[in-house]
Image (tube, rainbow, N blue to C red; front, side, top):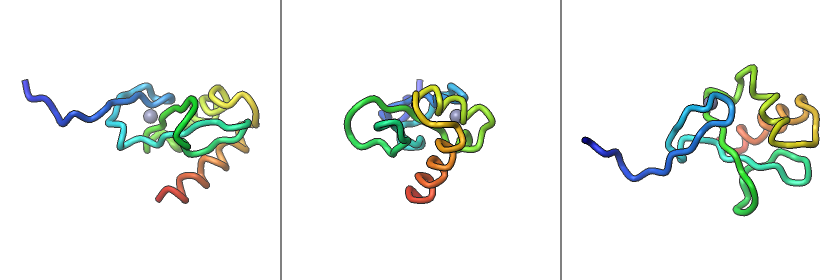
Length: 84
Ligand SMILES: [Zn+2]
């Protein structure tokens, strides 16, 4: 069996598919705000195709107990732009 490179695999919280960790956007909620993962605390992953999935706002709201879905989605767009 051909084993791929020893890449860590993580699950996207929206589509629940598994991807190489490096292909995913790693996020976390800090003080009710959506942020790129800062090195500590709880984090979660989003795959590139789910950044505009219709289920994404609900999943972000589930991860971030504070904040409306609109605010969270706006923040997600900012993070993606800054990440590029
Ligand atoms: Zn996904």
